Image (cartoon, rainbow, N blue to C red; front, side, top):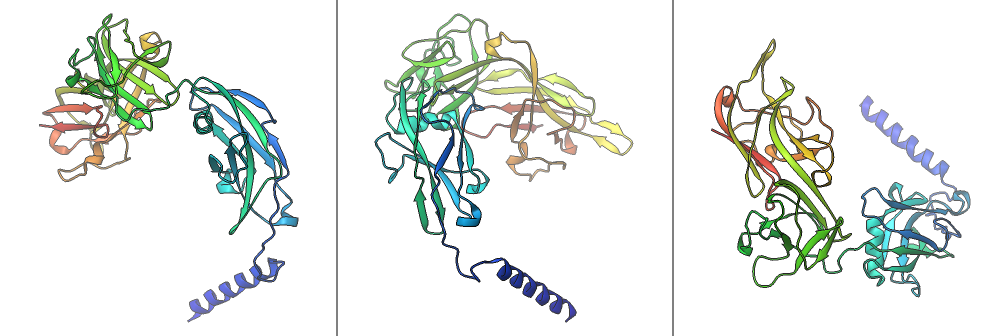
Length: 379
């Protein structure tokens, strides 16, 4: 009874406090004023868009006084130069869930907006932006509009749904039916781990039958109708971004089984084809004072910039953090992989089942298109 009384007193106090703070004595605050000043970027600013994920443009505006107009939510809206914002081509919320007076818009987003207003890839064009203030069902457009001029990325208007690697240098050779499918990691963005032969031509297609569209890469960009070569035989991680036209090549020197208790790699998993690495080995758990230690992950040694950069290491660790040994009934997601650019001894590891202590097993890493990146360990 005492607990119920205390709760009732707390609720009553909260209600009274809320009523005391409400200048309208409980009535809905319908005050809403439009933004009158746009601060950043300056009207007419020109931006050459870049494909980097970290590149963005900062937008800021001056909000009306909260004391005079109350609190509102804000959205930034974009439209064609001759548009009136009645049907803007793109709208996004301000920071802080719409309560902020600023937002950073990624170059990739601005590139998409530019496409919506009719600016072609690689071309320069202008559109405008303003701020929409809202409260409840009310909405009002700012009394000012600013223009922004952008030079678009060299992306593609018609982005492929599927992409494959084919050609003489590829794993499937010139047989299109054996082309190596790339993994779709986002809309218009693809990657693949595949083996290529040096000096021989290869290219990319959007299909494995008929007469699909063909693409190639040159000078860090994706282009249509041509072929590409690499200077060194090896396994490569290739990324293609058809939104921006950018591409990267990373030479994969090796993948190893990294045993956390020893802080070192025990063995290499050779590449066996079409994004699969595999080895049959025996792992003996390490005896500690508290028991047997079986923690592990995979370490990849790479050279970026097509193999021209210095060698570096990255980790393939668990996508779903765990500190438990798996069982025969553990979900497949236990073994899902995630790439970590910072290596460590203990972070993002798995544990081996007790059945694999000192027992030969086949260790397989699957970096393939039609399933999550994952791995298996079987006797």
